[in-house]
Length: 236
Image: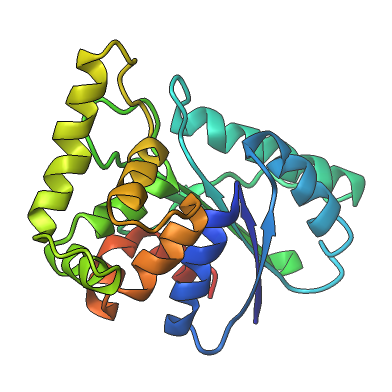
């Protein structure tokens, strides 16, 4: 079975690339929609010709920005799906249903046309004070794990205890910036870039994610991305 993944950016692609090992019977094709505003148009373009013609399994990975609600995000995608079906002359009253056991993933299932889509919405911040819930928060949660940060320090030949790295990234450097008149850091990406600088990675957030994921064992990976894994399982 092939799963079409619609993502806001490249970091999600790195996450799917790492998680696909847990789904050996599935093939994944990820589309970088280059932001949330283009996801619906990408769905219409990519899924429209397939609906009602062949089995379709699709996954949408969404962040939750400041001021957004889960209900609004779901309604936006629901409108896009119903537009596709209307073009196909398919009438339906289907609605998104919560994936069993997961509060931030929702499935839209139309068995009559063999079409199933799940939307996963990141709803967890890695640090207090952040304004958004993003895929970078989930990556940062991993990067703050003691074993992971120690592996990364060793990999980068940074001879510093992992807890010291975390303290510099989450407390000391942000405090120094505030004391010098800089605005507070507001997104996980800000801390990702600090973390990369402190550990001398000098990489973009997607590459940082790739490195962190590669230095995380499977058990911790499954724990941290349990809701995304459940969302994929709901497509089976």
